[in-house]
Length: 189
Image (tube, rainbow, N blue to C red; front, side):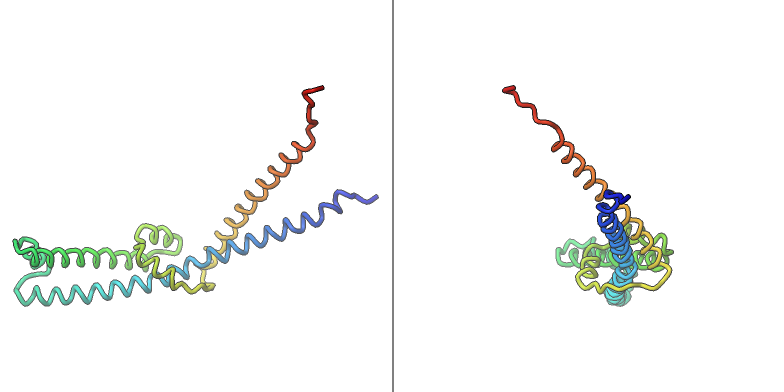
């Protein structure tokens, strides 16, 4: 005897199984991009650090020429009553602070083990640099252990998302089916 329910549900099960796998692969591909993105972000961050270091060297040369350390020179300028000199002191202090922040972020990202890199990235992200990295991002599939780990996480995320969405759809379909099955009471009797 043929089980008509099994025959009717076979295409539904096939599509369900196919969508499940597609979501898992899409999740893997999406999450595997993170190491690639971070590598490109680190490249940009390194460029910013190099540029800031060149600026610091120029400031240090000026400070050395007047017989002061960079910190002393910056403080001297900040203590000036002349607004132009004071603003220069503010610029040097801000540039020094930015250099220190960027250099620390670069070192922490480069030294972070793969399992911590996401959290270190979030902790130190510079949104201007991140935006620039995103605008010029070239997707790729890293063939490293780190890339594989992020892909595995992506598989799990993709499957969880598919499970949640498919269960929500099933609940909605069942609710609609129940509404259609309820007899409509005629108040006029």
